[in-house]
Length: 208
Length: 286
Length: 125
Figure 1 (cartoon, rainbow over the protein chains, first blue to last red):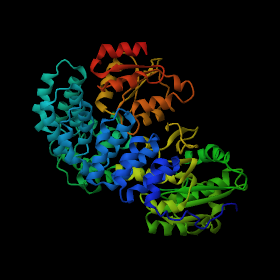
Figure 2 (figure 1 turned 135 degrees about the horizontal axis):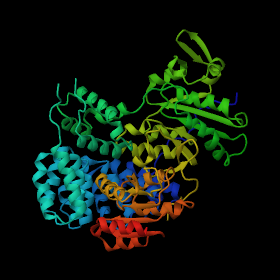
Figure 3 (figure 1 turned 45 degrees about the vertical axis):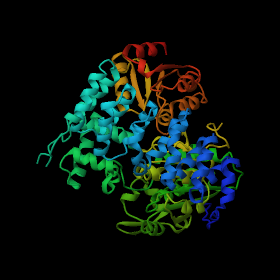
Figure 4 (figure 1 turned 90 degrees about the horizontal axis):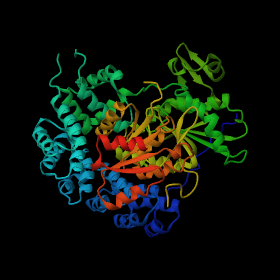
């Protein structure tokens, strides 16, 4: 029978030498940078090294591994290293940053009120998406507050998209006020109506 | 019992949007009853006063509710030749492609993870013996791994009931199994010895790395249960366990689009599978 | 429904945006398919033929511009499917990047987007 059973010939455990990891992070081949990106999750100075390397890394797979390592470190320092990347010109870098932050809602939570007030409308848009990862009540409160002060239609649309999922009756006034402010914006009118309908249709207790 | 429909139109759509976003599974009006029945089941199991209440739990993944919920929508039974279109794809396309990079006699490595009670890796072995003309020309290693040591013990023992064998023709059962009694058959020793079973937690790279790199990985119906953070890490681990150009097959309700962009997607006649890029620098590097 | 109506693939992570487009496009007689991000779109395009793509930029896992650049590297006819990029981006750099996106793509600003503009864009696309 040609099917053979092999004894374990797997690679030995990698002993990460911090100095080598740091060097490979920016100077290695694609495979080496990948391995270094993963190893950086467990060495001293990892956050700084990853944050720096991210600025020049062009390979999307290596970047993904770098972001994952930052989320696994998960310290406030690591989160702070990712946040600025939400402002980047490069759409794929922004996507990577947002995807990473999405996996650590507890660590991101404290930053959201500030992010939802950012001067940059695009940052506010991306932050609405991060609010989706919060518990229902908290998400509703944050986005309801945003709707009452937000001047940009696009940001309101992003908030309403999340409110269609998490919104409760308490946010109806904010939705109505938004509809009045943006009566000329077709998509937003549409989205507000859906959010409103979904909130109003919420059933109460199960019939027995 | 609850009246049908238990969800309003809007609640149903909200739930479908949520499911589609999280898992990629598509449900719409025709599947209304199917979805509602399962939702009501979970609502009762969690003592939820209303769908609103239940949806909050689901969103917050309270007490692992997401896993239980998704579980209700996936077929969890394991049996021989489950999703045989992937087995067909294996011999029609995946192995031939891998062989382009191998010399005759070189080792072909296949991984079934999670392997549960062994039906999947043994099915692969059986399939190759019966359907792959070149099976004698190459060395093949099949590894089956799972986090649960009990199922691994069962897999090593290789004893199965009627239901597990239901997709196998009697001729194959006669050829590869010994009947032990009315209700059980044991796969023959040569096949039991041809699969190596190991314990592994796919979220732990210290456990996955020693397994080395494979040509083809079957990783069905586990990633869909993980949260975003665990999915990413598992995907990265599995990527490392693939040779460049190697393939990974997920469960039919699963998609890498909800998990990771590490893999390229490839379509073959029988299946859609994912592939680690074959060359350094891939198309997405600069 | 069968006839020879053209298929438009709407690629956007917002379920409400996809619903909005679906309404407009179906009313105008098109068949609509959906994908939630660039990766799902690539997968879908292996199974369905689309005559036009409507592509958002900001999406999880694979953004719209990366999707288009991956698509253009495939074989024809896949690589040649025209795309309308509709984005809420307000930065000039993004506008420029979107306009510089691979061939057969045109760009609409989200804030300019309404029923009429979309259908005009679709008819030209």
